Length: 294
Image 1 (spheres, rainbow, N blue to C red):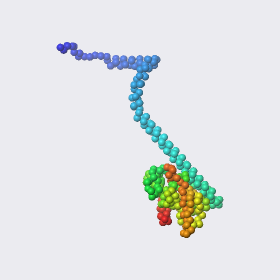
Image 2 (cartoon, rainbow, N blue to C red):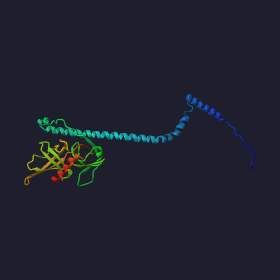
Image 3 (cartoon, rainbow, N blue to C red):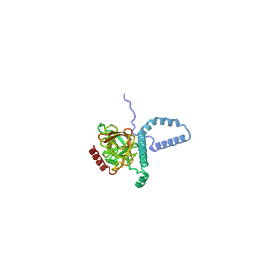
């Protein structure tokens, strides 16, 4: 049986102004209590514990982005400092080789040519990307190309001396033929007596050869070969190789010298490319002359 009730046509409650007054009064009371007493500290701590996970979740993207930016900045600074140190080490080794060459010249020639101060070539620091797997050539691929000012024919050096020369470039990479490659030929001279020769990539792995010598040539094991500067491609005074032995053939009247390069491209990842203006023309002439000589 349904109970009968009185239908309420109008419902009246506290007015909005009264409710606002009550809330304002409560807020003022809470502010007063919180300022003078520590009664609300447990409640505040409980609320902070509850909302802490939500706070961390909200700030997680910002913190992750900040960590990524800090890591990228640190990596960039470390890479820049590493390149600067490598460049300084190689340039100091180049200056030392120039000093050894100048010491071997007589005082009159130094005054005549005014070469007391070694000229430092502009250079580009490069890093090895990979080494092509080719048993018939000795090349390296670097991480910089024509966009960095590298051109075919430019010489590549490390702290030991000449490594090779650039043979092919793209906007962002370059390919270098090593000193031991059979397509590379370099004008050299003997540091001991100034004898000018031409060094070729050797048939023996890891060696260079000095060919077309007379049987009585003044060349002995232990002699140091440096660049002569003829041709304008390789600056004079860069270390090239040390003579291992000289094969003399009395019947033919010729001799062949085998030398070990002083550079170590297999040990390092960073090198310097010397920016020579006439590299393209000199490369074409050098390769052509080398092919004809062979």
